[in-house]
Amino acid sequence: MSPADLEALWIELGRPSTRRDGDVRRRVHPESALDLFVARTLPAGEATFRVEVLYPVRPDHWKPANCEGVRVDWEVVAEGDAWRTYLVLTLLDEALLAVFARLCADLCDVMLERGEGAAALVAGLGRLDRWRLLLDGVRAEGMSTSRQSGLFGEMHVLDILLDHLPADFAVRGWQGFDQHLQDFRLGGLGIEVKTSEARQHVRIRIANERQLDERPWHRLLLACVLVDADVGTGTSLVDKVAALRARLDDEPGARRMLDDRLEEYGYLDAQARLYADRRLEVRRLLVLEVRDEFPRLTEAGVPAGVGDIRYSVVVTNLPEYEIAEDTFVRWLEEARP
Image (tube, rainbow, N blue to C red; front, side, top):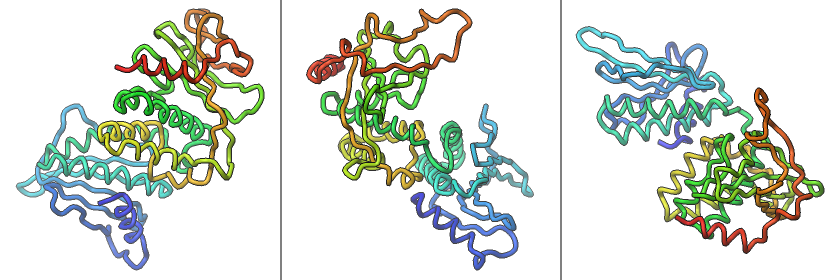
């Protein structure tokens, strides 16, 4: 079942006409070796997702731990001469229902792919651990506008990379979901991407002393995506992501990798509607080579005992480091595997 199908079931089960004494639930995927249910607890009406197995499952080194906005309960109980294992996910914030539906649909897909009961459940637990990390940064109101702009800029650069590099290589090189690394790591070429709405004295913020440290690289570039916001001719983040996915229709491995990394960044399809109205138009891509006396702080230049480095660079005052478009393209093609 799709996330939308599961969400619709929870909405139906939450209606007063559906409620009665005790929990109300519906079985999903009856073909599965597992018993899978969506339910509403009563009287609280919390949305839950239940997985039941008819024998004891005690996976090594796995302990139930709550996700952000989701309580995780795990129990193995004796029922007469038999055993039953229960995994129950309970949504604690109804505003995240669409995200919860995406999580549960994903767990279903993973478990159904494995088929057999115990192995399927253990596979689902592994997937749940990944979702726990993803949900740590998820808010009901979605990503901040600055994070939306940052992702838009990175997707704009990825679009350019796909014109000149193999799809798998380009998508694998995108590391923007990890804020401690350069946004693109392409062999010996590193690219840090910054997005700005400023028109004059474009000031970009650097998050740590490693972002503009060129020492590990054959060449390090700073790509500044200069945009105008909320313009009628612009493109929404949702449309930008959809266009990139369409480019990867014939590259299923790269498409799956992109989808996984978008989720790790914090872009969840269940929240896409939150980003549909804000539109950005790219005014210019300014690419600078970080070298020589480029103004920045690096680990080598930070005194011992100083940490949590954050600073700004005015990139419009650095014409001597700008590179032309044809040079940028040539360096990209030199980075091909």
